[in-house]
Length: 172
Image (tube, rainbow, N blue to C red):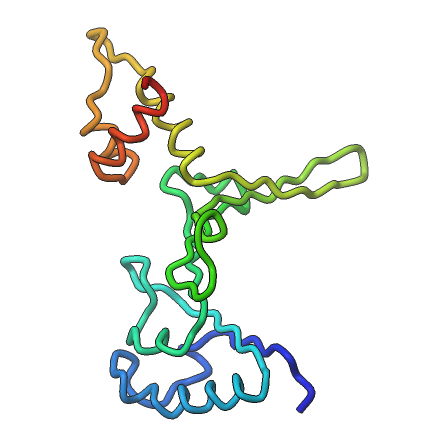
């Protein structure tokens, strides 16, 4: 009765009625969420992604949501890096500009004797991409050739246009 925020972890487990890909199966839950909103209660959902990285099931789930955030591992993520992920705002009402630009965060653990200090590092995705672009542009193969922007774009998982834009930040 007195809750201000309710966390639902995870949708697939908690809301098992209906067909996951059918928007009509979500109608009753959507009506209940709107009741929570009218009562001033914030609902936060944790949900699994499909194999392509998008949310599982119907996109109708997002219709009444104010914000949708997707957490992803960076393309160059290695497990030994620990907790490192990208935050992408896929839907946002009332926010714009830098507030919704994707960024990367990493949890850093610094041991000093028996004491561990934990800090977070935050970087804009574009800054990470520019740094990686610079590293790839600097590589030279055994024949003395540098990789093409097409090759770099493919390796970074970005479009050729984005690769060109990033390379211009390094060599204007």
